Each structure stands twice: as structure tokens, then as C-alpha cells.
Image (cartoon, rainbow, N blue to C red):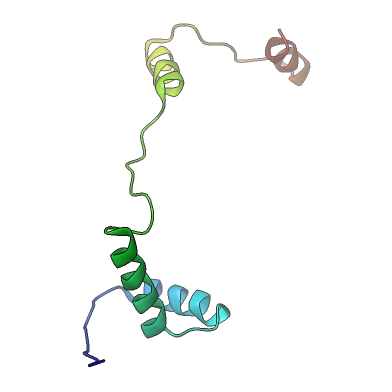
Amino acid sequence: MNDTSMTIRTNKETKQQAQMIFSELGMDMSTAVNVFLRQAIIHRGFPFELTLESPNATTKKAMINAENGTDTYGPFDSVDALMEALNA
């Protein structure tokens, strides 16, 4: 197998944090990057799910209601009042 080198750029803090984690796993940065690359080949893409954070339908509805000031509860005058509303 012919090895080759690769240069990547990342910020210092990211590199240091990653090195600490990889060290705890018993590997160096080069080994960790090679594990990622091999997994990307096996998965034919990223070896983990890439998603955009988006609220689900229930959360979206609650956000809209909060913005409109409708269908909201509180403020509560006491913890007991809050608990009573939660248990209703």
C-alpha cells in the first residue's frame, strides 16, 4: 500500500479537543482520520446522519402560539399552581 499525505485546516481548539478524545481511545489524529475515511467508504457517504436542527410539528405549533400569545399557560404564581396545570 502506498501511503500519501493530506493537509487539512481546522482551528486550534477543535484540534486539541479531538486529540484528547482520540488519545483516550488509544489513537492519534492520523489513525482517527483514517478510521473516518474508511467508514465513509463503507457507508458510501458520511458514517453518521447529517441533519439540520428543526423543530418537530408540536414544537413549531407551540412556537407560533407563543409568538401570537395564544394557547399559552402561565405565568404561575407558585410551583403548586404550575404543577396543578401540568397535571390537569
